[in-house]
Amino acid sequence: MIEAHHLSKLYSRGVYALRDLSLIIDKGEFLFLTGPSGAGKSTLLRLLLREELPSEGDLKVAGRNLKLLSPSQTQSYRRTVGFVFQDFRLIPRFTVFQNVAFVMKVLGVDVAVQQRKTFQALKWVGLQHRMNAYPEELSGGEQQRIAIARALVNEPQIVLADEPTGNLDPDLSLEIMNLFREINARGTTVVVATHDRDLIRRVGRRTLTLDQGRIVEVA
Amino acid sequence: MRALRYAFDEAVVSLWRGRRAGILSTVTIAVALFVLGAFLIATSNLEQLGDEWGRSAEMSVYLADDASAEHRQAVEALLAPGPIVAGHQFVSKDEALQRFKATFADLAGAVDTVDGNPLPASYEVRLEAAPGAKDAIAELAAQLEHTPGVSDVRYDRQWLDRLLSAVTLVRRIGLLLGAFLTIAAALTVANVVRLALWARRDEIEIMHLVGAPQTFIRGPFVMEGVLQGGIGALLALAALALAFLAVRGRYLVPLAEALNLSGIRFLAPELCLLLVAGGTVVGCLGGLVAARTRA
Image (cartoon, rainbow over all chains, first blue to last red; front, side, top):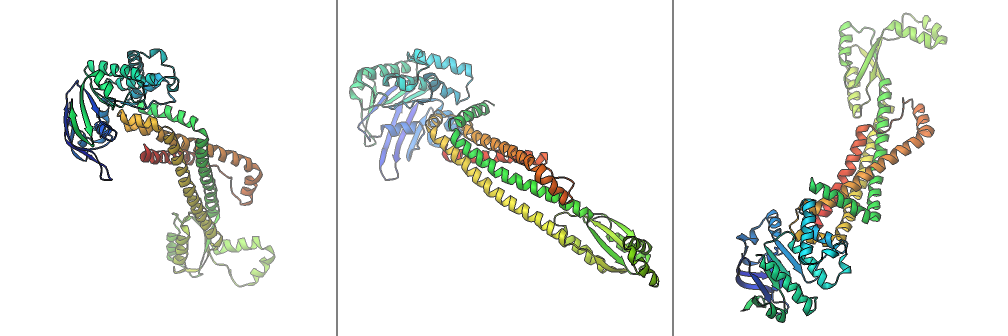
């Protein structure tokens, strides 16, 4: 599903965020990326979202070389990827329902389909009863569940999560991880970047440890 | 169609949310188009004035007493109606004498004391007063002066030249000022749209990440510019119409009478449409520039 060959990312100030990284993530796999701050976890996710391009090497997702995508191919690629961030990135002016439906609205999906799928996604994360609330009225855990519902509503092939439990307490973190496990159980490839070793141990999935842009451990 | 509907709905919401800045750019466009429209009204009426005066403008071509029928034919060929000449009339020596006697009855006796008829036959030529006709008229006069059988050409063109120059000058000033204000209006729209883009940067980020098409990302901001431009142009047109009606009876009608003008006209319907289309295009460009650089 995801293949990286001698992948490097060099920033203009001469610092390598990723260096000669090669890896394969199978379709339907659940993978943790861990390591200290600055190890390159978020950079790899940004490359997978095609927010940035590799400096060297190749990164392929479902056979598509992300380096070679045209702007319109990038758009269609991104429609197959869901993302979840540490800071949730919900739109404060929108209700919970509008936040989730927004993803489909801007892709021109029919209104009836938008409503049906949004309700299903909210029901799946257990927050259908809060659909008219605004993000600021929700707890951190609830906000992250909304962000997960938003990531899932388009039925992506891959879900990328960057420190999704970074702002949550341990119990809520496990609850969020259980949601990711359920997403994965449906056949979706999940890549989660986290520095929470305890959480990784409790979930127990393949883990790549990065340090200074290189893979230092596979467990 | 769905993208257009989305762009329109979002633009209306965004305009309402940022209505203070939106009013600023809409008024800027309205002011620019008001000035442009006022100059267009002025120049179109001056053109009409030139046209009407031009129709009554005359050139007199005096013939020598020994001018032959061939000479007259050559003169008439030059005076054939066209872009410069509206028409001409031949005044024979006898007709000229009769007119003189009718106009200057006191001097009629004095003319009778002279042997024969001292007045020459002539052509009275009505001229067109199209802008840019000045040189062509001068050329025609020169040609006529060198035509055999012509003794003199009289054409007091100074006033017509001045009018034509004034029309050209007023139009240039109007276009220059209009262009300057229009650029300022487009920049204002661009800045107001940039403010809207900044206010909605979180939405734009999500849109990029989910692979939304550019028509959905940039469309609302371009539409915002279009709406500001269109509304500004309609406001300008309404203000022009109100101002025109307000000063028409008191100043414009007496002015028209003083200038011997048949009437003062508002902008032609096609110019009104052009003004609204222009405002919309300016707004669209402002929105497009902002959206291309920021979204």
